[in-house]
Image 1 (cartoon, rainbow, N blue to C red):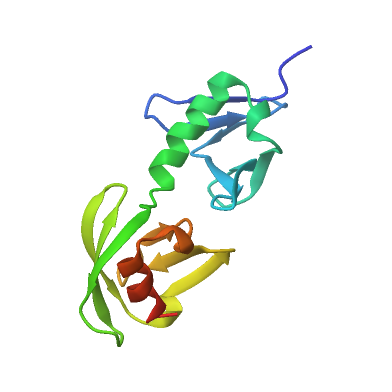
Image 2 (image 1 turned 90 degrees about the vertical axis):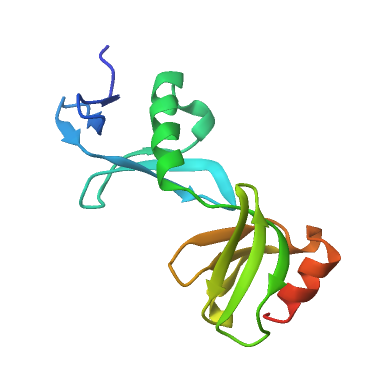
Length: 155
C-alpha cells in the first residue's frame, strides 16, 4: 500500500505537500485550528490560495518526520511573545505606551485603543500593538499585582 501523502522541503526550503495522486503542491503552510486555546487539536495543510489540502485531526498522530517540518514552519509563522509583566504605562488613556517584560525579553509597545485587548478564552488575553504585533497573556489572574492594576485600567 502506498503512502497517502508526503510532506517535504524543496531545494529552496519551501514546504511541499505531495497528495495521494502524487500531485506536488509547492509553498504550502500549516495552520493550527486553535493555536492558543488548543494547539494540539488539529493542523491543516493549506495551499498558497488558502485552500485546505490535508487535515491532521490530532497533532500527536502526525508521523515524526512530518511533525518536525510542520513545527519548524509554525515556529516561523506563530511568533507570539507572552507578556509576563507590565512594568509601566505612559497614560491611562489611549493611545498609550506600555513597557512590558515578555518571555523573549523586555520591550515597549504602543496600544492604540482598548479594543486592541481581546479576551480569547477564560483569562487569556491577546494584545495587538500599533504595528500589528500580537502579544499573549496566558492567564491575567497570574500576573503580579502591579501588572494586574495597570491592565485593569484598560479593560
